[in-house]
Image (cartoon, rainbow, N blue to C red; front, side, top):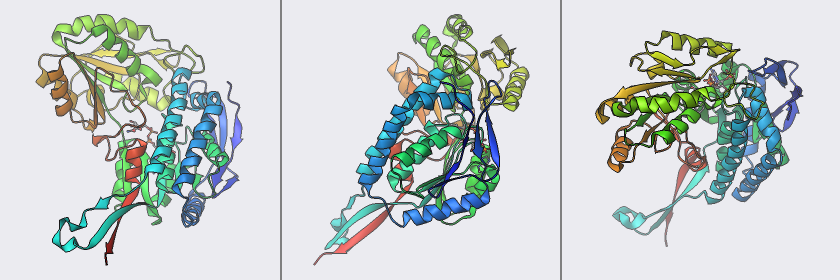
Length: 473
Ligand code: NAP
């Protein structure tokens, strides 16, 4: 479905407003304008916070919140093709992947609706201490307050869903700042939320200069939590500047996979080829570093490189495209520079086909090369031989990041050892670490973040426990 360059107003405090200024949203593939969005700044952000504050003075009961979330699921289902086309147009994501993202957003909202209905505190065994005898104690889970949500360009629908749905499930109003390159999918979700009956003020979307909007969210004391997904450079700075707020960070990774010689190499090659290059490697858990036991190294490459070369580059709107563009020229130049600067041998790719970076495999780069330890966020992966499991674990851990990692092996002891010794928030066994299902706890350690998403975990992070103690007669 073609996306026409419609003008989109911003939902702020229950009204869809124009600001007199517009921001063009361009296709990363063709450069064409695919939408124009009203551009907001500090004033609109303050207005959005005022509206969120008013909204939260009349709490929505859990059953109403759950019903609204379920109606959003139905809205996405009804307009699934439109959602996928919008994601593809503004992010340059191939339609195959965009459709999966639209379905995942439905899953995210569905799980959040379940959490809204389950949200409860717990009994405290008061008489377990002498001081508590004759008392009844329990906790309530209260919404933390207004949430400022900031989202990245790479999953413009589902990562916005991971911000909005759990916050509403927790009973929090949200002021959302989506990525300037991809605001259309976020506005689409806001429209569906309106249609689903979300009362005024519970969701406002501000699109515009990041630091100006970010400053207001940080400085306004009524905003009690910031939930941020994006780069570490921005995320950790926000946390530093807001010591009294909860600042939940979901950041980058340089995703490693360990391949034991005993693994089924055909399956591994297939899974890694699909998961290192999908959306041109612009997923925070795109496979980037593959460590293969030396005995299986050549056999793996024989299977892997042809599969990478078979991936189809092209227009993300085409149904058979596997790999499209990266988000912009700056990203493209940086990625090509990192490839050039690596000491490893380029086995395939490393150059452009038209304006698109060809999927690139680099053999045995130095540990210090950027492609070996920093986040490439492009269609590039390295393949390095290892001699012992100790060495493989050290190589995989040799990064400041720690979001997800994986191992392929048929030996249970290898799998369990790796799962315990990799310093990552999640470890997949016989599955690419790019795997994510939206209800699972997802988040990183080290520079990759400080929180867990997945509706159950995000709701926990956006609520606080209030203790009630009753003196019994
Ligand atoms: P980014 O440049 O950090 O931007 C993320 C968001 O932060 C955007 O909305 C951006 O707005 C905003 N922003 C930038 N500067 C800001 C400031 N001073 N104050 C407040 N907000 C500010 O990241 P990106 O390039 O969009 O996304 C790629 C990164 O996200 C990668 O590192 C990737 O690994 C990470 N990521 C992590 C996860 C996860 O769940 N762990 C998931 C997806 C992506 P503008 O667009 O207006 O600049």
